[in-house]
Structures are given as C-alpha cells and as structure tokens.
Image (cartoon, rainbow, N blue to C red; front, side, top):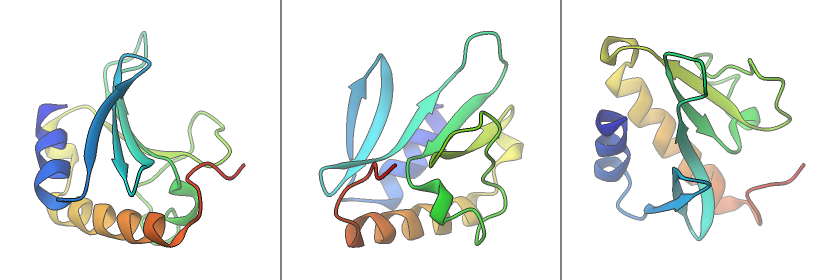
Length: 107
C-alpha cells in the first residue's frame, strides 16, 4: 500500500489524502477518486477507482469482481503485479476525467 500511495502522491500534486471508513481515500478537485483497501479474508490490496467504469475499456487491468456499479479496481498481491508506467497513465486519465465531471458518484 505504501508503494501505491507514493506513486499517487508523486504523480498527482493536486491530490489530497483523507481517511474515511478507516481506509485512505485520494481526492482530486474535492471529489473522491481512488481508495485503497484490504478486504477481510483476502491477501491483496484493492486499488479502487471511483469512476472506473469509464476507464475499464482503455485500461483492461481494471476489473469489476465485486459486482460494483461504477467502481473498478486493480488487485495487487505483490509489487511486481503493478506496471508503474501504466499505473501513472491511469492516474492521469482518472484525474482528468474527474476534473470534467460534476460529481464523483453518479449511480
């Protein structure tokens, strides 16, 4: 989680880190964009993008395993599971998408 956190904070200077529901949320433009979570009984970090439904075609690494309406996520078991350059590109695209939207949660 710390490695993912450092990438987020270094890539997006406009991001604000906040804790809600005892997990880290990363907000851009005063709207939630990403949260990090370790689900009970699992052995991976869930890197969840709030508006992931709009990004999943461009970034097939985003999955909808929990049947969520708009959130899509990346499951990371090891640091090697994360392609740094693709993740940075995904962060930039998610930030740009959020800057154009009126609200983060739309469903």
